[in-house]
Image 1 (spheres, helix red, strand yellow):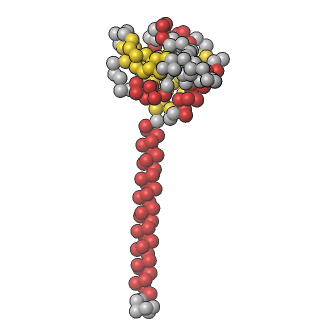
Image 2: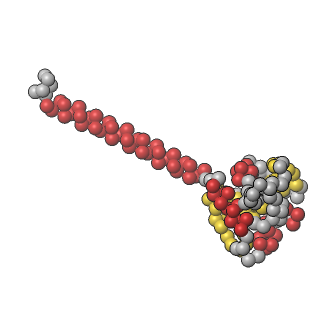
Length: 166
């Protein structure tokens, strides 16, 4: 006996405490694992179609990846066929085209605007026409042009979804 307690009762207490500690660690590890699965499920996937020689397209892909997108990069030889197949109007065309949730993303659209596209069931796609300086992928130096993100409805109407002044 030690301090009036039997050796066996101390061992039993230590074993119970050890088991409780292992249970807590297992619960914590399980919780962390499920958090990781939930975060991975929240990651948005986008297919990007681009020309092999376009440097700004590669920069736009980096912008998407740094904002949490999983990008599948497709190098194409005929971008016009891709745009035509998706119904991208010629007036909204830019150098690369993304596809997310069955909708098109044309040009240098900021990642935050793409994330909001799923909430707009009335739109078939969004676009930043042309290649405005200061837009994601076109942010070279200090020059910034104002630009808008335009949405295209099923009926073919265009509307301003986001506005980026100078």
